[in-house]
Length: 287
Image (tube, rainbow, N blue to C red; front, top):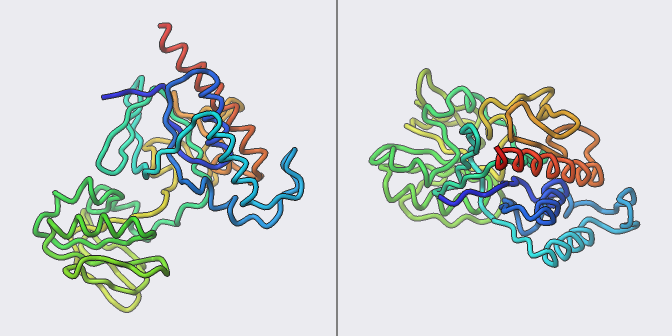
């Protein structure tokens, strides 16, 4: 399997800044994110505290960011990272139905992930999953419920329906959905995933669904769920001044490490995280 020097998760100011510095330092890296770069940036009406970008709105700054990374030859991989596992001197990233390896990781996930459902964390790996295409074969002939937070979840639901005996799809967005006829769409709010040692049902507003498994397909998940063993303090990744987390080789930057939630602060931390990661990678290579 191809191994990258560095994997960056997130395409906001912190992730992009990290990618720029990885490029300048000639590291082999991959950055996961969105073509829109950051929903937070796109929604900003006016920004006056980012040096050199006076009076611009978020969409205009987004275009400047996009132009910069394009000039640097940086491409964003538009795939959702479901899990990251520390393997000693490298990391394995589970991305839908693929795996990637990297010597170091920078988390720049922001703070726009969805609050977990009641029972979600307790039953994670016991019938709750974040990648339907990865785990669908485990539910051949069984009943599966899919809570989809974006249009991309529909594709995973369609795939699961080829294997599972019954599929419920619970859309959490306002766009029209397009799923196969053998999928039952349930337009009710999910409240709780129920089970003792494994999932037994999904409790919705006014309805209980008996189910063998629940896939929660979000735009992003919290760092503590993403990286097992990652130290979280007051809802943020705990890092030092070099953006190091408690896991060797895992760095973090931007909103996910704490306030203030500002673009210029995130970009600076992305710079530090990249430089720290480069030092870590070089030390390992020279052992």
